[in-house]
Length: 69
Ligand SMILES: [Zn+2]
Image (cartoon, rainbow, N blue to C red; front, side, top):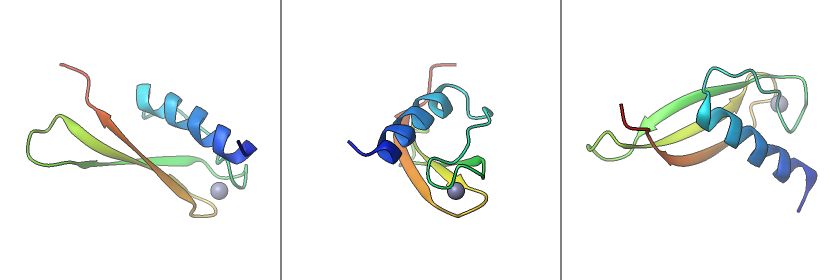
């Protein structure tokens, strides 16, 4: 597994639990990953969470279930 891939997985884990966490970009190491949620369907329970670097623009997405309120 590439180092960047591992870092994206770690970033995904952190931002899945805390979307306000400040996680540095796995690609450039300079920018901060910004979180953008896109609902999937109309149930409101599943989202695509985009992690976007504010410096180099690289991004990744994790599909996740929103925790019960
Ligand atoms: Zn970056």
